[in-house]
Each structure stands twice: as structure tokens, then as C-alpha cells.
Image (tube, helix red, strand yellow):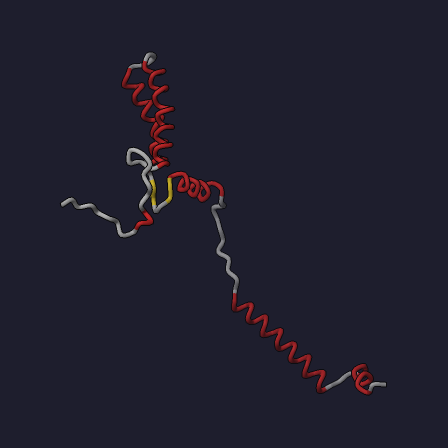
Length: 137
């Protein structure tokens, strides 16, 4: 009887379109062929065949890397984008800034004390304007 391994985590399984390749791989491989083969046939007559083959391989390599390389579920262009942002676009020195929760609590406590002082002062020592209002004249 044939044994077929079935993965337990189906989120990593990618649908195959044709020739057991994903749609991304098919697109990248076809782009590699569109770039590599004409380059090989143009260079074959001007240089020797091994040099034309090496140039073709190096021209097709970025497409193969885009098709096949994946790390932590992210394709190569996402990894390259993150690398470029960290390396060149974002500043090198990023100071660590926090919102000091203790300072917020202390400021609120000071405000509470001030409000309490104002309220207790008015109750114990009413001003002349307050007395006039209280009599209702």
C-alpha cells in the first residue's frame, strides 16, 4: 500500500498550478527564460559558449531567487524591502523614548492635591464676593 505524507499544518501548503509549481514560480521562471535565452543566443556568436552560458545564468539568477527563496513565510522582495528600510531609509540612531507612566501619576496626584486645597480653602475661608452671592441680595 502506498504511503503519502500529509502535513498537519495546512497553512504552509501552497496550491500548485502546473508542473508541480506555484503561480509565483511559473511567472518567475518564464521571466527568467524570456531574459536568459535571447541573451544567450545574442552572446553565443560574439563570445565563446561557456561565457555566454555563465552570463545567461547570472542574468536568470535573480528571477530564480525571487521564485524559490522564502524565509519565515516572506518572499525575497519583502525581505529585501525590510533590509533596505532598516539599512538606508531609517535613521541609524533611534533613541529609546518611553511614556513615563510614573510622571503621569505624579502629575495627576499634584493636580488632585491642588483641587482639594482649592475646595477646602473655599469652604473654610469664603471671600467677600462669595458672601454676597450666598445672601442672595
